[in-house]
Amino acid sequence: MTAYAFFQKKFVPMPEAKIGVMTQALHYGTALFEGIRGNWNAEKGEMYLFRLKEHYQRMHNGAKLLKISLDYSVEEMTRLTVELIRKNELKEDSYVRPLAYKSTEQMGVRLHNLDDDFLMFAIPWGRYLDTDSCKCGVSSWRRPDDNTIPTSVKATGMYINNALAKTEAIENGYDEAIMLSPDGHVSEGSGENIFLVIDGKLHTPATYNNILVGITRDTVMQLAKHELGIETIERPIDRAELYSSQECFLTGTAAHLTPVSEIDRRPLGDGQVGPVTTKLKKLYFDAIQGKLPKYMDWCTPVYKK
Ligand code: PMP
Image 1 (cartoon, rainbow, N blue to C red):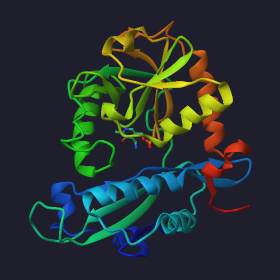
Image 2 (image 1 turned 135 degrees about the vertical axis):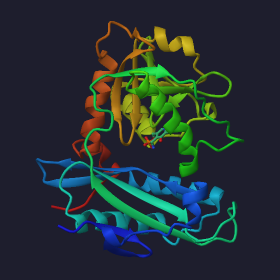
Image 3 (image 1 turned 120 degrees about the horizontal axis):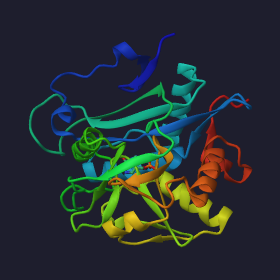
């Protein structure tokens, strides 16, 4: 079966979606991306795209910063994403990668006076962190400050930082990195936000701790509040608090909600996945698969059976 990408304003077979070697974004990281999940619900025979509106709103916000002009509104991008999944006839857990990039084939570091393009492709993709409970190491690489590269924007160039941290973590025998902010507080994983459970409450780094403000982070905070009556405290978190927390988990579109079992070779709690993490994980997976009627607004059905 032919796989299709959306490229230069139309759907084309994947082998035709190619960019030139002089493309500005390839050289200077001047592009924005999103990661969006399509979650397959086998009982209903339906694919649900999760929180499309929020992903495309985040892309539009980033586009202002990078001076990328997007030809499509949030609603149009939503419609194109549904069409992409249909065209590719995906009927399993999948991942959509939209990219808005500086497409001019010309040298020179800048953001102004360049053409832009918006592309998208979709692939079948199961687990990103291939583990039920993740071993993390605190990275020697720090998140940049907002005045170095704004971390609230998914700019491709910034992901050198994340790649350095991830590779260091894997080469040191961990599953994932935990990065600190320039001032030494806990920031986030290389592709996930982080939560601690302390005395029955959730604690997570605040937006000013150089995090990417995750859509999964927001999903989990809402589920915790409205379904379990658990508040989330957003605040600067010290490194030492990581080791004494009773439970810890990571959240992200690719990683979903992944429990953390140890950090820097120190087991958390009793080393088992704790009760709050277990409950939230179940709620989260039910929500993304369109099994919670109250949260269907988050789910866009693709096949509308
Ligand atoms: N932090 C970073 C650095 C990420 O790349 C991601 C993945 N987009 C996240 C956090 C989680 O964000 P979201 O829940 O919106 O996927």
